Length: 391
Image 1: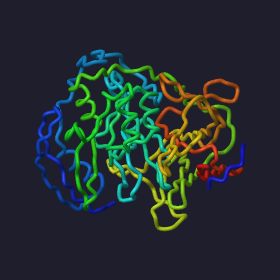
Image 2: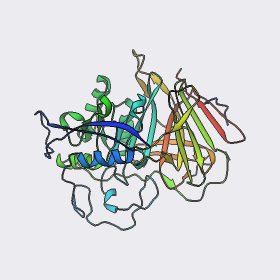
Image 3: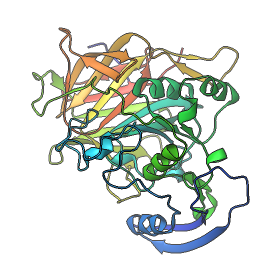
Image 4: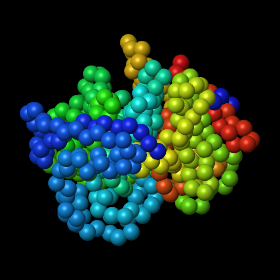
């Protein structure tokens, strides 16, 4: 391989919008309610869920646009290779929701562990952001939600998804407005709450949503919700022939932004730890505020792709997810040299050196976008490191 040097309890005060149950966009002032407590994350999430205004969820067995009534039993989620608890969940479009990683007081985030695929990408200023793709299960809360980037336009097109985000630079907004999916976007305005709600733990003023409310809002607007073809990934519980050891992966996007994936055999997944800001080495477990559990993924895939700054800017980054390129796929404590291909109808595909499809482990996947100029290295002990660079 190419040498690459890539290297309980909390206080929460919630200012929650208690909007009307109407799903129609409104310009009227919305009432608010305040909830304050000192409770563990899981209990905080429960309290927040109980207080969130809810729209009318589609009835079980309903044949909304794209639905097929009672549908087939034991339906397999094409994004995870797993049987879903409710086959009706697959009779809809997936939802791509933009989730923050910085500032650090946005952690722990809500809902990342419920996503089928999470994409991490460089945003600007040494910071990264997440695009979380939900399909086979719902999340009662997702957030904090932040603004879109150019890469999201490619992802929404690839997965024919609904897209929920905060705001965006005007150049990103213009591309979204001109896109074929403009009617499938959900933003705070004009959507209001629900599905896009504000709450305020210790003056952080987070924007949050729920996949159920996003789905309800889209249906209320008469948007085509026909499930797309998402058959691009191949799964097997049996790993490919063992390649190289891949017990751990550290990615350093900047001196102050780095994280580590470490394989936990007892869980059969890679667990994520994130820098805490304490120093340039320490990492702490990244948890999901829904349940307090550490974020894990059965597959971690590093997609190596050209990054450039948008002409005339020093911050806006274009990630050129076109054609094909090199990738490193981690599963079961091993790493595999594979190739990624962008599929405009079904998302990313992965193949081995001989051209045969690469088989992912059934479960969730995190995809890390790094630039072609990044420095990567691995050791015989299975320690891998990536230092992100843009020319």
